[in-house]
Length: 579
Image (cartoon, rainbow, N blue to C red; front, top):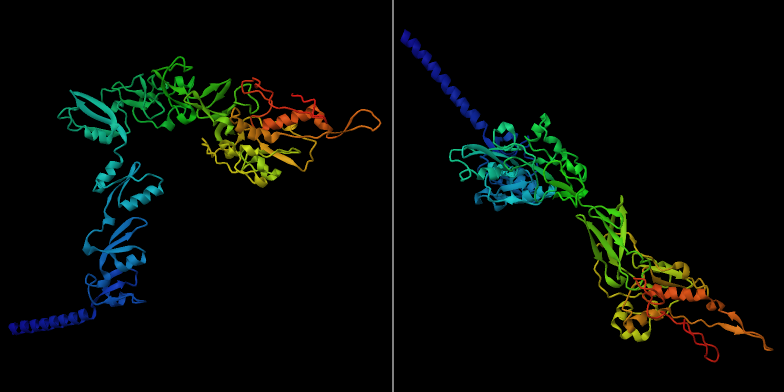
């Protein structure tokens, strides 16, 4: 009876097991896995039930694994603009993102090769295109290292230029060098250290830090460093320390910290000052842009001796003719006694640089003029071409005084002649006056070199005497356009001088009358031509044109000749006189 009962129970169990297995087969056949090109939740190329696939638009789904679906092949998606390279990316996704897709079957594309991109004290293990993009973003030059092939080495290389205390043992003495991390690592295995010595690097620490336990300590010695402006302390081992500050020698608590870690320039003494003179005796925070730099102390050049060491912040400013100029200032200069643009005079640009005044002449014959401006009392000057060549061709005030085109001044009531025709064969005259027909603007073929075309300012030098350039004999509707700064030329060469100077020749016919029954002759027309003021006006017009007329040269010596002639003719062609 018991055996029969156990057999019955076993039969029921087998029936239930078969029924459960059959049910599982039915359920499994109903839940076939599909490769969804995109799921309803937004995921791409996922194996899921068909009910979870997004079939909108042209999206596909097939009852197979995504590994076998052609539309879900994985590859590399390259963004050529950003320089990124994403692996295991479906082609469809890459197309939507605007990238270039490469099949992974062909291996890693060259555009996806990684290297080390150094960005100052930072580093990134990226593609070369990405490195260029990051460098441009941060305003840096591209520094891409293909030889660094892993991210750990790349990150370490970013800090290899950071300086600190490199502590090691040599001849049973714990000593130190203030070097970069790379230089410290290079010391390992060299003859500079003991065989069993360990080398440890402490970024940002000075070798004189007491906690390092080295034989290096603070001292009162100072030095200059090539490529830097400041005066620096050196420790007893000869290593650089912080910027020279006399207050950090006495031994207080602050002094210990000052000899332990690197202090930035902006946190050192007097960071916004040139620290020259009395300040420089106790502070070595020089600044080239503020007018100082590190130099060995000189009694003849420096006003104050340093309290410690032998180096100071040298003042780079200049004193010239009882005026003080800052380092880098430029200004226009006319020698004392030279007023107007006299024959032989020249414009000069002066430069204060590293405590010395340098003279830079503008082009000779006043073909260049010096212009000057100031910004917060800081003078800036430059030589630029004297644009006088087509002044004489201008027939109205507006064109004459167009400062963008020429350096000229309009004088109403004056008239000038065209250049003498015989001068047409003279090469230099043709350069100055290529065409005089119909008062067309002249075109200069002269090439000049300017030392500062971007500077604007006032020309230094007296223009022609405007007050004495008024010819009342001519109506105000007429006028003459003359150079603002009279040019010079080879007045000793007859063709060049005469072609220009004869432009100021003037014929004035004075008419006299007397009664038929006798009496004295009486001037009735152009009588002003007999006055000395008319003579002065004509001479001033001569000198305004260039090196013409009655004038002294730049050393205040009168010319060999009077410079002009006034010829008076009567009916009998007599009474010629030369003034």
